[in-house]
Length: 511
Image (cartoon, rainbow, N blue to C red; front, side, top):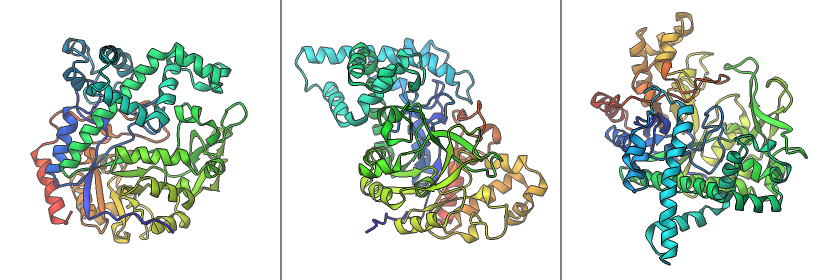
């Protein structure tokens, strides 16, 4: 029997990436600005804060291509908190020029400056642990908390920390280019590198411990304020990740551990060539045989991090697009059947009382609609998609069914102001009529009213749209490279007027 998840109450939330929060350290963190943002969401009488994936990013800086499905991004560890803990001194932090540009993340600068500072914090932390053990004081709070963290996360932490230590050892080459013995995880090689790289392994464990401590405290603060966190998880893993290296049998790889088929989507409005993401596809038959144990652990871990879990590219669980690895683009791909309800039964069981949002954008598939209804998962609607096509467009509010989540736009879209400002009148003709104005700023206001007044259970807008920023604040342009995932909000950008406007919308439309 299918376990139907609980529906959302009529409510509203705000999308804000952790990386985009204001910070003196070049990127958003779990520091004061994060708590201020919780206060902002609460003052708006909204219930949800949605974040983007929080995993450690790789080449390209996309949170949807991470080194791990379980680990957290080291850059989000707040340095002021480490100072308060006595692991850093202010001079070690304040003498560094963190900001290349106050409105954009400079990821190269982050990599060059953040890790040396975290190493100093680790050194002091390690000294404290050693001192605790020497005094036989295993009951000391810090030591016991760290020991408990290691035990609770042993399923993924050991492999991740070893993987990252090996990345350093091999100068950040992909694991497929490592020596054959460790590439294939031969026991003797694992033992050898665990001994040789112990300090680096412990360093990466320390970072995850601090990430977990800081995030848990922030989430508890949000929950006490009545704010729930919506987390976002990518459906696929990057090939160069600890998960693929440590669980190669769970993915479609050949005898040399090279992907045979990779993920993507067919040609669409974003690209005539489709999108070849390059992620290795899951070996669904093997996963089913072992009870989807990796997915169970992943969803249990996500349920600890978040109150609601948004599954990106949910369609791929029902029908997934498979592209030959050697193909130059996505045009030669085809659809195949995914595990569908077999996997969802495991997911529903693993998350307990938490909720799911299914990102079902893209090609409309009847099988997906049926499975969403069977599990009571809300679908997604995007108002930027509403003004093209015919009058049966599912993103038009008068076509909504109650159990859905409506967004102004997602991380892959233009900002609303950018959308209405950068498109010509011939493209926006229906939007002019539907929104009853040709004034671009007022069009943004009317989109908010449209969403809040709709029957959708949950409405979510990005902070950039609350601020009415143009496309210079866009998070991601699909099929492009170089300028994505960088936007940061300036300190003080959100003010009492924004609070009053958002409170008004929530009040008038019963959210």
